[in-house]
Image (cartoon, rainbow, N blue to C red):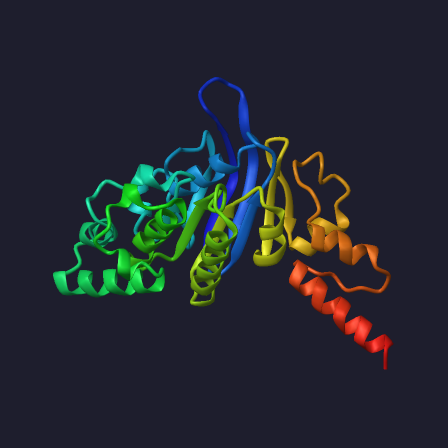
Length: 271
């Protein structure tokens, strides 16, 4: 479990970025983090990772105060995938890149070999083991960064705009991968401006607005009950709008779900 308790932060210029933010992230959750550009979403994740330190407040992991722990220490239980993942890659092959974390943990050569092989298989990268990471496409680079976390047996992985700039096939592959990892017990926290991802894949949504936590609840609560979506830099997904527009239609989190509900309804009226 990760916690932020009454965290306040600025970048040294006195201009508040976050004020009195308290958030609990439970083990095994799949959480989306949303809000306007510049609202502090990435700052939240950087504070959790130890890339920044709060001005006031505390960061805890399983009840232990880790506020002053460096990112290298936190990487033992938390992985981070940058918006441009190539910036965190520096080894000549995918296999060597994925092996770096386990090596830093002091794992044996045999254990490293098994961890890397399992991570590459889990992320569908086995055939690219000898590829040069900078030559990969964006979706493949994302998966290399995720494989690096998987190889370290990470409890939690944080991703910054993981689907931006990806085509629909790469986006679908990434979300299927994250869903699979979450079902296996990994905690997922992702920053996204994609409302369809928030609605379809996230169990819970956190929204940052006005320098603090503006919303914390389910996607259904966010998209059907909040009247200030625009002010928060959000919008209602098409599937949700369509389901709300049809009297008696249940909440639908995706177009696939909406289509199935409509077909069921039409089938029912023809009997």
